[in-house]
Structure formats: structure tokens, C-alpha cells
Image 1 (cartoon, rainbow, N blue to C red):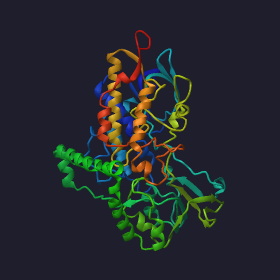
Image 2 (image 1 turned 90 degrees about the vertical axis):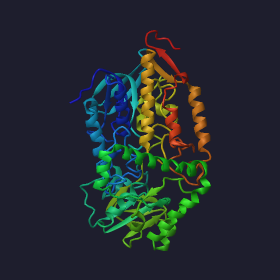
Image 3 (image 1 turned 45 degrees about the vertical axis):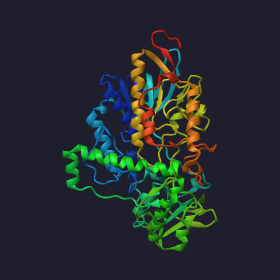
Image 4 (image 1 turned 135 degrees about the vertical axis):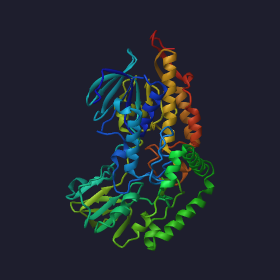
Length: 496
């Protein structure tokens, strides 16, 4: 069992894809590095540990949604299911020996920057320690969001969020209300309609849905990948290339998007024969404005006679049912919330206290921003993984996480070579970078597609999406650009 030390050079918070990427890359660069990973749960895996709802799978091809430094020939599908992604992450931890550096069931409570010592004073649920550097790898989709609706506390049945699925609750013969029609709902609703007596799906706004081109990987293909790893690398490169081409439509030439939406309309017409439901499921905004959904059976499951589609959203909850925006009551005994997460209000931001005594959440003021999505002025030696404006609408976040990990490794290397106690990104550098980000986003479908989405914060800014090609981000994070940082030498203690 790994115990909590009194001090550590690099503290990584979180053991999902982001934390594993950061810790593994740091140790690959310098195996003697003093690195510790703390994880609030009892196992690694992050969102792929927590989300165990029926049908849970990745909507990015598995060849790309995996580490470049840890390819696996054992995937069973081109779009991997949750259990095998979780097994894959466990396998990476075991193979790299990272497990010897992970303290589980250890949550970050508070971390305060000590300017006098140039260190982080850290409090966890298992005790206190100091850290020279913190890598916050807690993810953007880690805290479930529940709607604030009247009467929710009076419900006498069973209710839970899709991210905390209640497997002990048998849905057979139940009347189930599903609140939300996002990426999770499209996967689990087709799985539960055969069990439940009736399913009522509450939809605020429809989403564009296209087929998921999934297939089973055969033994010959797996053997080829195992014997000739270069073939799997070539497949990964091909998938990366054609997914990257999506940005041309989403960000640079959105006029071509109607061609893509035509595919979605054909898919909808083929799967939904009920004209009223088909009209309710037809978006009135440009494809890509909200997250595009991949499914082969979501639409057909909504076309069933024992499935109600409520177009208008949830207005209230009673002791025995749910009420729509028109005041109609639907008797149910189970409510499943598929209402997403809080990406613009990450909980970790409330635990990190910078040089001026403010938390990261207070410094952001409700609108997260960072330099290269990774560092924030006033928070020295803090590196965010999956930080502001690093999310993608077309490719794999794992690629972005590896890019950020490269940036962290380069920073640590330069700090060591220059004998620096701390680095803090300059305020003007951060401001100029974010001005470029928001200028670049202004003409994209994510900002001007005619819909409201979780990409936008309360001020209408987009602190979530990366505006262009991922290789641009990779190139910008290859080397830590120390000229944009204010540093404190370890030997002198003077700011330079």
C-alpha cells in the first residue's frame, strides 16, 4: 500500500486518462522523478471507472482513444465499451509500474501556494503534505449535474444520475423517466426500453444523430496488430487524419455542414416513422453547435409505442411522477438523470488557492481561462490537464492530454536545468492567448451555430472548445515557452 509522504516534488491529482498520461510521461522522461498520484476513489480510471450505465461506450474510435505510447491489439470493437477501456487503463498502470505511486481513496481538500517557500501546502482526506508542483488532472466531466426543479426532494421512488448508476435497482416492469437526451442517454435508453414497462424521455432540445460505424475486431485483425504493430499505428494515423478533416467544416468552412446534416436527416427518417416524434427530434440549429451524437438504435428506441418523448423539458417533480413544461403529469417510479456535468465550473477550482489568497474559481469569476489550456497567472507551478479550451468536437481528447503532458515534462526539465523554484505565466501572455482563442472561436459552429450548449458559460463565452486543428495545439505545447513566464530561482529566491 502506498502511503502519503510529507513532501513530494510533483503531485498529480486524479488517476484517469489525464493523470495517467501526465505521470507516465514525467517518469518516462526521468524515471527517478519524485512523482505521487492521489485518487479520490478506490481505483484508477476516472470517468471510465465511474460511468457504468448500460451501453456505456466511447464515441471516438478506439484506435485514437488510447495512449500512443501504450497501443493495445486486444480491443473488441472499433468503438470500445466502458469495461474494456477501464481494463485498458488498469493495464497501463500495471505495465508502467505507476500503481506503486498512486494513493487511492485520497481526495484533494485544499492546496495553497506558499510564496515564501515556493511550494504548495496541500491538505488531503488522508493528511497533509507539501508539493513543489501540482498537476490537476481531475477532468472536466467528473462531477454529475442535477437539475434544480421544484419538488425533487418529495419523490418517493428511486432516482439517480447516469454517472452513478444504481445497478441494484431492477428496471423490469418499471415506469421510468429519463431526464436529458445527451451522449449518455443515447447509449442507455436503448438498453432499458426492453426491460421497463414504459419509458418517458424528457428532451429540452434535440441533437443531430448520425450512425455509429462500429464493428467487431476479428482474431485475424488482432493477430496482425500484435505481430506487426506498425499496422495498428498506420490505422491510428489514418483515423486521426480523417477526423482532423472535420475541423475544416466545424471551424473553418461551416457552409459545408448541411451536407453532413443531410446524412443525419436520412438516419432520422429511416428510424423514426412517427411523424410527430420525428418533428420533435429534428434540430433547428447547425450540426455541430451542440455535441453530435453517434448511435444506431437511439432514434428507433424513441419510435416505440411504449416510449414517450416529451419535448419541452422537466418542470417539476411530485411524490409519484414528473411534470412537463405544459403541466402534464407522468406517473413514474424511477427517475434517471442524464443531465451531464459541470465543465465550466470544475470542483477542483475551489480547492486551489493562489498567490493573492483567492481560489482558482474566484480568480476565474465563472469564466475559466488559461494559457495553453494548462497554466493560470497567479497560480505558480500549477498545471491543468484538460483545462479551459482543450475540449474537442471532432477528435480524441487523449491526443490533447498527451500534448499537455509533453508541455508539463518540458516545464519540469527546464525548471531543473535552470534551477528554478517556481514559474508563473505572465498575465499579459495569458490575456493575449485567450484573446486569440476567442477570436478564433467567433466564427465556428460552437459559438455561432444557433443553439445553447454546455460549451458556453453564463457570460456567453466559450471556455471549453479548442478552435482549430489538434496538431496546432500539439506543436504549441512541444516545448515549454519559459519566456512567457515569471520565474523564481531556487538559489536566490529573487524574482527575475
